[in-house]
Length: 229
Image 1 (cartoon, helix red, strand yellow):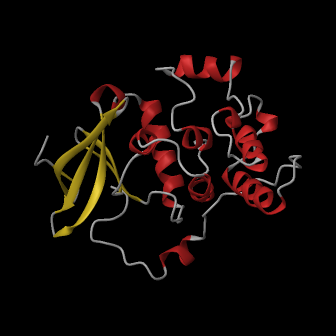
Image 2: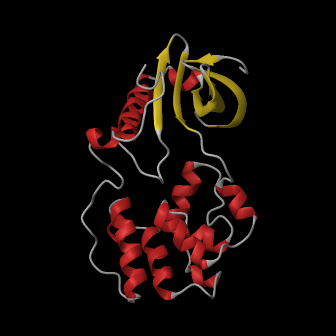
């Protein structure tokens, strides 16, 4: 696998593996200073037509996003025996490394929530995983039967308003959760300012970080070979 070329990128280092395949660091063949993350889909998964349809849909959605907290989509490669997503390569520690370092300061959690809002608030405050399930069925069962405890049982210094935001993000019922990322971000910011104790109406859904393609292309040059394959 190492040294293989996928589209315009040569695989140089395996970064990880998961349910759907492996992730490799890729270097552009014409620009050694330009690196990407190449997600190679395993043979067992890529042969499923339904998976490919869902993957194309995901890639189209990612391609419309332009936000500093969303990894940039570069290219979808579907040719011969290769199916791969080419994405922006992000350097730095992953979530497991952050959790291993222990509970994060409240100010840092709020900063990360403001950037990410991906349901990790409880874990960042507690410094450990909330659910110990190892597969989707166990995790769904835990969510429906147990759910998140009050984060203040783990962090006495957590302000009430932040604990309530965390509870809303991890609510068992969909009616209790913000409808999308933009609504969650609006909830965090409004509660941070107000410090109120009652969570109010849910903001209207929106797509955070999205801009029309014409605006998105201004001020950012495209590298050779970017685009759908």
